[in-house]
Image (cartoon, rainbow, N blue to C red; front, top):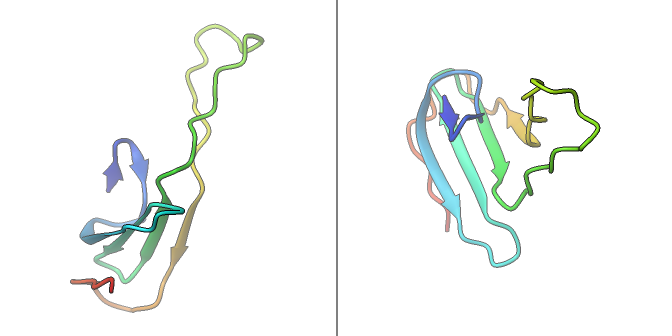
Length: 80
């Protein structure tokens, strides 16, 4: 599943949570196969280099951490 074109987990997302930290906004996503994706929403999108070839529109992927703490669906999350 994608968040604005960003693939946070390898499979379909079943639950998401936002950690409202003042220093770094984090998005957590749990999928149907037990993967937990962690995305730092404060990452800056890299600027295009003027030396890039015309027609090349591939943006570098953002840094995403993926863990597999479960063997089945992560159906809910609670951030306290």
